[in-house]
Image 1 (cartoon, rainbow, N blue to C red):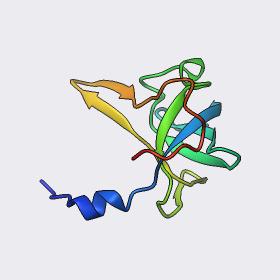
Image 2 (image 1 turned 120 degrees about the horizontal axis):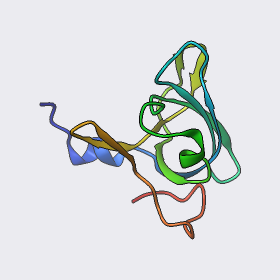
Image 3 (image 1 turned 135 degrees about the horizontal axis):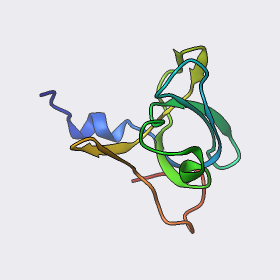
Length: 108
C-alpha cells in the first residue's frame, strides 16, 4: 500500500463542481464524458461510471473534483481533472456535497 503524507494530500486542489452535461462515449461501455462547472470555469472530465449511474443520475449533482492534475487523454477526450468516488463490494458512490455549496468552492 502506498503511503500518502499530509504534505502530499495538502497539495491536492479539491473543489466542488456542478455536473452540467453527461454523455456516453461512443465505443466505450464504461465511459462518460462530463462537462462540469468549477465556479465560472468549465472543464471536461472522463469518468468510468456508465455501469453504475445513468446520465440523469449524475447531471445536476455537485461533486468533488481534483482540479490540479495534468490533463490526460482518455479515448480522445482531454480530461482535465478527476472526480472522487467510493467503491465497496462493487457498489460505486460519487462523493457529493450539499446543494447550497457553491461550484468552485475549495475543499479543506
